[in-house]
Amino acid sequence: MQRPEARANASRVFDISSFFKQYPYASEPDSVPALTQDLLRSTYTESPQPHLWQEGVDCSPSTKSQTEPCVPEPATFDNFTALSSPYLAPLLVGYHTGVIKQFAPRINSTVKWEVVSPEDVPIDCVGSPDSFYVFYAKPSETDQGAQKSWSFEVCMPGDQNVSPWKNTNSRQEFTEELFMNISVTGYESYYSDGSVYRPREGDNNLTSGIFRVTSTTTAGYFELPNYMNGGQAGPIIDGEPDDNENCGIDCRSQDPDPWSASSPNAVVNTGVGRLAAVLSLPFC
Image (tube, rainbow, N blue to C red; front, side, top):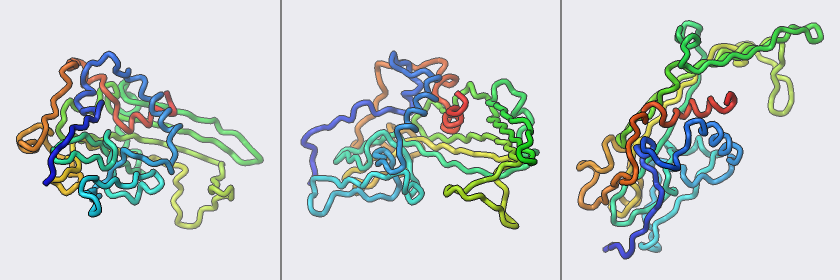
């Protein structure tokens, strides 16, 4: 029979709703591009990602020792496509709560792109003052008898001053879209080894066209590995981690921070979407 002998605290584990609180040390929204750039510069595809969980991983205690839970190998971005429904969580992969039922926040996003027609681009995407819009172009020039030019237009519709995040610890999901109109004329494409790309008959020309990028983000809470669930992380739950359906007598209450106060402007200025954060990098 398992019984707790000591309590371990994992400090500074954020709640999703904590982003809607007023803290003296809170980051300004304008710092998102700089923080994201720093993370990208310091991240390597082969580096272990200890906060990158995946579904269906059994982390039950080892058969050799019933006192120490197993610790899965940290994933990397090199094998990201081989992971089963990966998601990010603030606790280390395999964090085991023993005989106490406890929940932690998780976030995952899926991104896809597709070629679309001009009719698929919202008509107010360019003219709206609240949408994100940039346009760059190089005028046509002659180089060894060939006409060369390029243009690059990006638009993210919607009010970019309003955060897509909701002030709730229940499951939430939101979708972001951006449109890119790329035109490249007279420039040769190259493979990674430096050889010139020669399109074959039937190949799609993906260097020019109108593209739609769609990102869907899902956030909520999941049950951490413990002895009651066989050491396997649970799926994302629909409700609050503290409600009667998810938290019973075997569950320790996850009280909100008593030293914080809700911000009346939280829905407007708290956090950008994940696609918007990436989009801001080359244009900040």
